[in-house]
Amino acid sequence: MSEPKSKPKIQKEAVPMPKQDPKERIHNFNEVALGYTEEQAVREAERCLQCPKPQCVKGCPVEIDIPAFIKFIRERKFQEAIRKIREKNSLPAICGRVCPQETQCQQHCVIGKAGDPVAIGRLERFVADWELQKGFEIPERPPPTGKKVAVIGGGPAGLTAAADLAKLGHEVVIFEALHLAGGVLMYGIPEFRLPKRIVQAEVDYVKKLGVEVRTNRLIGRTHTIPELLKEGFDAVFIGTGAGLPRFLGLPGENLGGIYTANEFLIRVNLMKSYAFPEYDTPIKIGKKVTVIGGGNVAMDAARSALRLGAEQVCIVYRRSRKEMPARQEEIENAEEEGILCKFLANPKRFIGDENGWVKAMECICMELGPPDESGRRRPVPIEGSEFTMETDTVIIAIGRTPNPIIQRTTQGLEVTRWGTIVIDEDGKTSLEGVYAGGDIVTGEATVISAMGAGKKAAKAIHQYLMKA
Image (cartoon, rainbow, N blue to C red):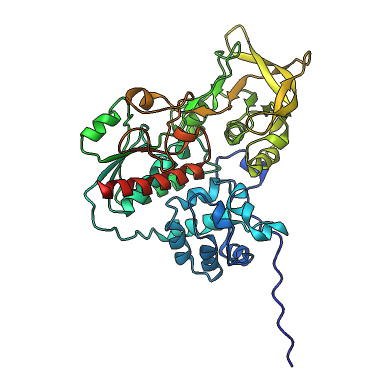
């Protein structure tokens, strides 16, 4: 009698993603993570247990059939894998790079209980990049419904809603305030983390679905929502994000050399100041740069400043490393690159020189008290612990809020006291035929959560239009 075959042993460690060496990458804006090879992707895909009741799908805001696309990678059926992903996600090359999979799909991975979870995001990136090399497969469109939808904002929420509505046969027009679509994907995330050619390729895919993109259209100025509805649009989706920077309100905040992360990253990313003088958008970076904040935007600003020639970059954060909201991967990348972190500290005022430029920052030490409304321990200043640190450039990265232009020019649109738009569970606002989703509703959040909101709203808009 033959011995029963034993099951192959599952590799507990994920296949590592190749990266640029820190000593080299701090001198360029090329992508840090280099992506899987075919062999690496197949090896990682083989770690998937193909669970009968996959928990990972529950953690995906856009509900990708994760085991199915991973199974196709195992079988080296890459076209089928990307086709499966695009059934639910129109921006896979973006999500594979910036989606926080570790707190979403991968957090629910069963094998993660015994070792590393399957690297779902890296596998998604692999097949999306494979598709970019081979060329897009555009799905066949259904017959036109005769309905027309205006999508305000060409960021992740707007692009997702537009793509889903176009696939359902509706005529869709995106109104984008800037000269390029992509929103925060274009202006907020640095080239070394999300190359602009990747964003543009995904925007081009959405266009190939039949979506029209009109740039340099600031709704609330060039048009209002009531005007769009009068001009023949049957429904409107608002996905304008949260692009208004927050300030500290401290003495000296108007000194030269102090930027908001919004201004700084727009100059670096969208206006390509990193390529000056090829692109005529210079940006002044001192020898000692201080970044205030602990999120992904703070990491992006700090790492960009380092690449622009700063000799020392220090992140000042009022909580400890454990409480930092940035992705662990980005914190580790920043530390590898030599960026310093001053934890449990908060600025009190900025000190200028005789020419009106910042030269120092007075701070105070903090300790962690009881949890606040977010569930994190509240930072409390320690009396008498003030100290001064020299700095000649400060970047304030403490979050963003929605721009109020649409809210102020749309009578009857219900908003909260924070300026976010009030919606029901389907994304419908207080106005007939007007829907919203993403950061304009939730406040600053993740790319993938905005995409999930865009998907949900697109489904509700379709149902609304087909009943009309």
